[in-house]
Image (tube, rainbow, N blue to C red; front, side):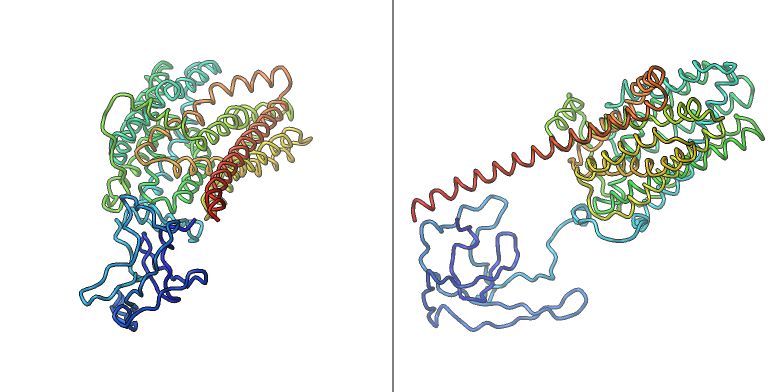
Length: 542
């Protein structure tokens, strides 16, 4: 069927403007010869010149249209849509000559929209750091993440001191810190969509700094009690409920869609780099000056983030318009995700992997202690090897230029599950350590690709709520998965906690891949059926 743009036959070499302003060259059709143009309707082409922004002359050919042949009823142009210009010859200038589009001349579009729509392009592993706002943000995150990991170690040590080595008290502290994510995690996304994200982040960082300051003062003064730690850990979890989705959704407002995958990978790299550095620094400081000053150092580290947020150039941010307050916004976000099959597949895959395959805090400790009979220092070495792999995976992900696809997630899910199974079957401790590095690389490849896929695939006004759901699936399932993995280790052995977690990851990746392939084949069948129906009237007329 002939489209509206091709409904008229024109002499070879004649250029016209399509409905979207692009110059299009038409060739003469042999089946329908054009009517010869009269001297009144045809004129020789002439060249007009204009200058570009760089001062170079740009040649622009203008021609008068030749006489148009009568169009067959099948080739009649379709009615244009309201947002498209009517098809046909382009308008003439003051002298009556038809002007063609200039390829060098950009279309009138907001700079923010141009940045959002640009495709990824090569630029190096650290290309997002060319953005001043992101440089400020990343520098603050390096300092703050290091302080956060220092506080995690100091908080656990303080609880063990106050509770006389009670593992139950330590578990309660961790549970209270994650409980708000399970209870209120989705509401954090509503807040992220409703208010300017930069201001929300400044408030959450201030609240986290105040909580760390209070705990540090209590510890330094010697008046800290276990219930103080419980209460402050719960408060930190409440602040994290709002901070996590807001921080995730704010990255694209700093760097735009083009560099979002790279920025997410660099964020993961800074997090895992701090995961290597923070505990080591905390161990030295606790041994020298105690736990209290460590909390105070972490409270001061939030100043780096606040300075970076305050110093940003707001006119360079690609800010999404805040969503006005209305009833049912949480349900609206859930319906939006439920109606998006691609997002649902990512969430299902990440949910299974995070619940059963990524509980390395539990599984690595069990294997190191029960299978290889190592001490705490050897367990720390195993954790460092996994963090090293995660850091390497984040840096490798930062080199990736193409937009991540679901196929990458499925393939890396299979690789991750297989590596986890093999890691659980290693006969020696050193081979076990060696396999943790590629396992960490695969784990970080999945998490960075899944994060970028979710953010790039959603509407800006929904991004906060969607990322809140993603963080709930990714982090909120840990309190469910850790006890399940522990039960498996207790009844079937420590090795099986890794092996079964890897097998579940492989099965989840295969299931998601099968559903995605079935959906693509179904869509292809619909397209073929529609094309066949369109061809039938033409065949009957012929």
